[in-house]
Length: 248
Image (cartoon, rainbow, N blue to C red; front, side):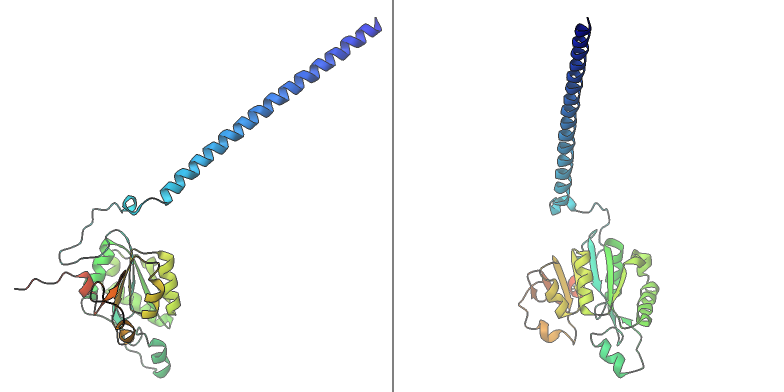
């Protein structure tokens, strides 16, 4: 009787172990299936994200109803646009290419002033584009002058965000900012910065100044009065961004 009971108990124990092992195998199998489903889901999600990042330029055209006012042209409406103000928008000893030398040679500083028709163009850029204004300066005092000039000219009211008024102390800093923003178009006055940006920015406009004319004079013919490839060399911004008046 005892041997029979022992056999029955051993048989029950063996059955319980088999049942436990079967249950564990089932849970393991379900876990593998769940992991496979999660892997497939995240893989599909990653592919979808990659397709969005690599979408063609046509798919990334900004959706905007803003249009240029009559008389303006070539301003990339709805796109990011960077403009260096030194010798393009403003002029004066504070902002020339020789600003550092001028600061060391003279204690008296001239106030900055707008160049020609540049204000109207800057206002239209602020109204229609994601505009960034970059200025190379030598002091906090000059920074304040630039901000005050932009405010008095109504550029902030036209649409320029104060957070997108940027300052740097070197030409290297100018180039680094533009590379970081990756605009559709960049306006520049330095031949050195221009050369460094050529491989990276789709459209470049450089304004001739007494400090860069010798470097730019050797450039091959191109759009907007000179240049080549993705570069336009102009005497002033109106030559590129404003339509020529019809002869009367």
